[in-house]
Image 1 (cartoon, helix red, strand yellow):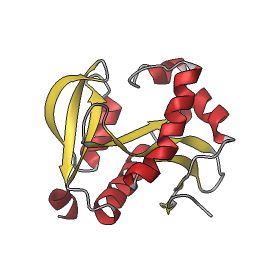
Image 2 (cartoon, rainbow, N blue to C red):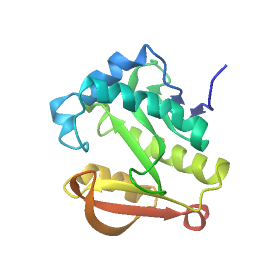
Image 3 (tube, one colour):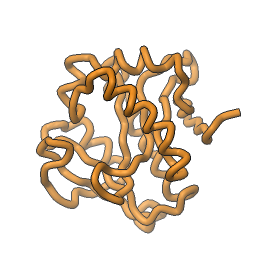
Image 4 (cartoon, helix red, strand yellow):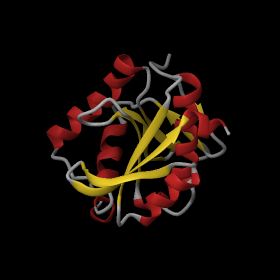
Length: 172
């Protein structure tokens, strides 16, 4: 029995993290070209803490992160979901896909499913996303799912833009 819900989209299964996913996940997030667009590379101990926090987030908040795997192949290609933004109460959409999955629409597909879960199942009033200013691909993803830029600033020690989508705008 799953500790938290699974979501299946046309091409993806968003499911709970499993112990065997850690090595694959770690390889995806340590890819040098992918780290350019993430907020920071983490040492192994920090990655383990982050992994545990993703699982604990479900008990604390009723939402969290999922592993993203391709339905047809069961290949783990990244993670996505909702989390509390560091240092605040905002709920943040987060996603990270390995380089082999880029440019195929997986991030947009997963982001839509995560937003639907947050608004429909968790009754959240709004969800934000933080995107590095130079990350054009990620900016396109959040804009495709209806998020609007709210403000530029320093988030997670990087120059980034905070995007927001309200429940009312999502439902329109």
